[in-house]
Length: 254
Ligand code: NAD
Image (cartoon, rainbow, N blue to C red; front, side):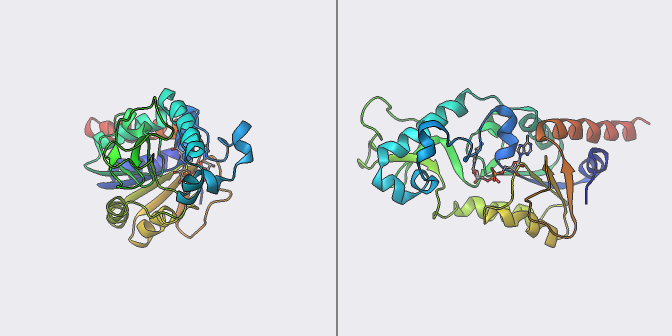
């Protein structure tokens, strides 16, 4: 079923517990390409599994490091768009708000979101491939990839690769928020990558209204009771925030 900004704004203004899941589409208007779109030029000859798996990294650590270094440079230059800013605003307005992201770009934090559950890690951090210690900073002027100053292992991006488990605590918190919300917004994700893809269905099973925000409802997993708000998330979320809280102030000052 296709819904409207006005109808969702009404739900948002009334909801006490809101959970949001975002995917690569939420950063599209910040110019961050999807994984597939980033595989252009010299990268087009590589298999994604080689660039984003522990086995690929073990085989060609410098190549994988360089691919992520290029993406990291792109991401750090990008700016949050109106969708990121609207979600930071919703966090300020709703008492019990949980933002869950599959993105690794850090743009929710850059927009001012205080608490972000990162299911797939963050490309701006690295971790040691041997001892697993996460690092916010590292020496980038020597060996590629750099070595862990503590154990000498290769540093790698702190992201979840094919075949790896999601961070257990993050996934457990995301599941709990999905079970315990009135309204669940799934924004800019194709909802195909498990286990994150199941979160909207978990929310729906536990009685939440589930709204999918996406330019298209094609290619989305379908199910009864899921409502679609069609459009680009930057535009739609900005409209949603202004409609939701215009309604509240009209109710308070009729
Ligand atoms: P996806 O690439 O599978 O799907 C992106 C979705 O966004 C599509 O359904 C598309 O229709 C929609 N979309 C495109 N433009 C949009 C817009 N302006 N507004 C709203 N929606 C829009 O992305 P996914 O579901 O997140 O899964 C891909 C995986 O790749 C994830 O695991 C994610 O971690 C990773 N990834 C992250 C980033 C990032 O951090 N920005 C970028 C690429 C890939």
